[in-house]
Amino acid sequence: MIERHRPQILLTNDDGIRSPGLWAAAEALSALGFVTVAAPRDQASSTGRAMPNTSDGILREEEVRVNGQTWKVFAVGGTPAQAVQHGVLELLERPPDLVVAGINYGENVSTSVTISGTVGAAMEGAAQGARALAVSLETDREHHLSHSEEVDFSVAAYFTARFAQLLLASEPVFDMDLLKVDVPSNATRETPWKLTRLTRARYYRTTMPKRESFEHPGATSYELETDLSKFEPGSDAYVLREERLVSVTPLSLDLTSRLDLPQVEAAMKRSMQPQLAEKGER
Image (tube, rainbow, N blue to C red; front, side, top):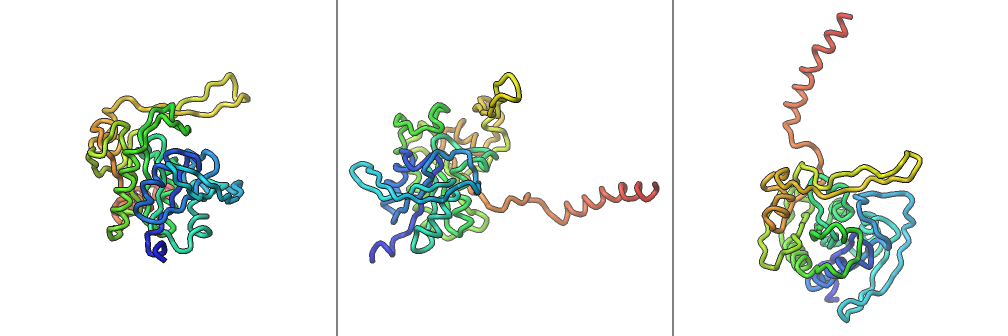
C-alpha cells in the first residue's frame, strides 16, 4: 500500500539496459519514489524520438545486481522512445509522475538534441503527459556508445535526483515540457547550475565518410567543435564547456518558431503580391 502512494518514476536511457549510467540514475532516484526501469536491450544512441516499424517490441524481464541490490528490469526490443511507450502502456499500473532518461555517456547540447535518444525518450515521456527529465554527462568521445566503467556517474546521479525532486515537487510550467541537464565531466556536488538555451552553433560537426567509391560502405561520423567562441554566452554549450557549470535547459514540445505569426503572414503576402502581378502581366 505504501508503494502506491510513492511517486512512480519510469527510467530509461539510450545506451542500453546494461549501462552503468542507467544504474547510477536508478539508485539515486530510488530514494524519491518507485522506479520502473524499461530500457532498450541494445545500444540505441542517436535514435532521437524514432518509432521504427522494425522494432519487435519484445519485453524481457531481467535482474541486475547493483551495489548489493537486485533490480527487476525490462529490456525492450525498441528505441528509447518506444521503451517509454511500453513502460507507460504496459508496465506501470498508473501513469508515471516522472519520466527520466539517462544518464547518458556524452553531453547532449545544441540544436542537435533532436538526434539524441536520451532527449527523444524524455520528449516522448512529456508527450505522454508526464514530467520529463533528460540527463547527460560530458565524457570523452572514446566513451560514447560504451559501457565504460572508467566514467564516474556519481555527481551526475546527484543532479539527476536533485532535478527529479524539483520536478516532482513543483507545479507544471506552461511550455516547459521537459528539462535537459548536462553535467560537466569535472563537476562536483557543489558545482552551480544555470538555466540555459540551446546554442544554434553546431556542437558535433558531421564528418565525411572515408571510402574509395560510393559502392563501398561509408557512414558519416562526427567530431567535437573545439572553437568555443562559436557558442553564445548563456547557451548550453557555452555554460557547459566555457563556464564549466551544470547546464539546465527547459525544452518545449512545441517547435513552432516564436514569431508574431500575423505579422509574418502579412509580410509574406506583401512579398507575394509583385509575383502575382507579374504573372498577370504575362
